[in-house]
Image (cartoon, rainbow, N blue to C red; front, side, top):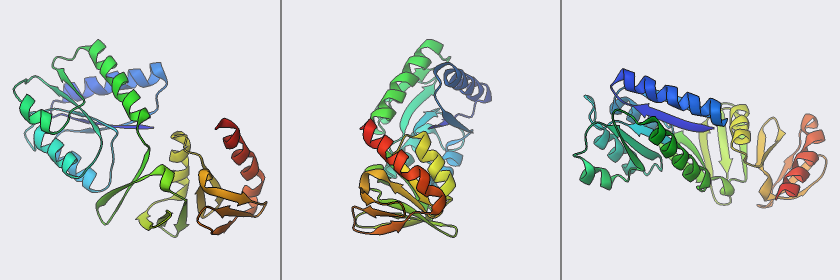
Length: 238
């Protein structure tokens, strides 16, 4: 699913952008989740809490935290969101260059150009190395999906196991599994508490999976039937 933020203090403009995105979603069958903000400060607070957006439509001139400062905050936190500026102003190009905007759209919005720029952004996002993003103690973090060995649920906590580290954050394994499926990550649920990256499977039996780290995980009875079929389907698709 593509996560998109619209940040503009002009309500008719945010509504217009949202309508165009919903039309693209319906027309091109692209799954999207759209959030709307009316000032940069609200967007930045949400990002500080761990929210991540693949694409952000950002106005330059806003009453509370303008688009330049908002973009500087995003880049300062090393967040790789694509930024498309939408503004009636064209006197900020030097400052815009510093925050690496992807595209610039003038107001009033040209609908054809909007669609073309969206498609350009979508292709770029799809071609990127995929990252899993999460937050812990209001600190934004990301991991390449390829480095994740498995995710483990412990109460309200999710543990992300890699070759060298274990990271923790609050979450639900069911929701992560659903998101991984939407992104076409080859993760397989093998237990109520385990979601594994199939690329790190070194051996498997009906009741046990051995991973590249040398650890073995138990396969829950209700997951045994589908484990092999999912795994071998993934191997065929490689």
